[in-house]
Length: 171
Image 1 (cartoon, rainbow, N blue to C red):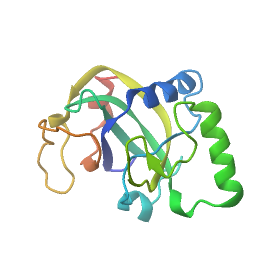
Image 2 (cartoon, rainbow, N blue to C red):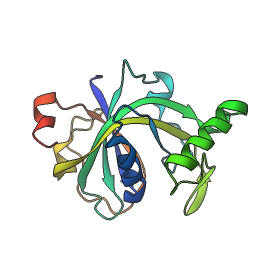
Image 3 (cartoon, rainbow, N blue to C red):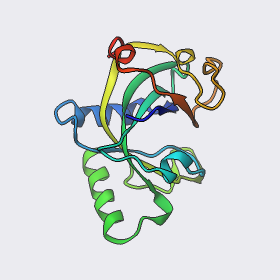
Image 4 (cartoon, rainbow, N blue to C red):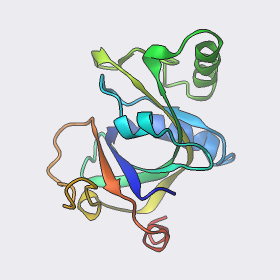
């Protein structure tokens, strides 16, 4: 596991529950998240995670932004603007079938807005039995705790990846 993890702020919980519905039985099965942003998640794009070199993921939900409620692993990344041909068709089929609240590999989010760029490949998603405040996560760039004063969903922050012992206390 890498030293830097990723925090996603305010994902729709129905999307996460859809992933959990599959991964509760098949935790290694790769599912998909499509953050609403026209900006690439640069570190994932430049050093794409794999099943052998994943990036830990922490997630808050839209109706509880200051609390981390889910944790998982990112094991792949794609720029959706560059997906073409058979790969795009296959990804569309998988998402339509296994994540019915999603509209396949979409270009714009539920609220419209900019073209969505990032397609994250997710495995081992868990809903935390002991959710915790985002201020327990440390911004990897500044060394400061994340702010609990979040008022809007969206965006991400690179964070220091907590150690396994700390994380197991929340699972």
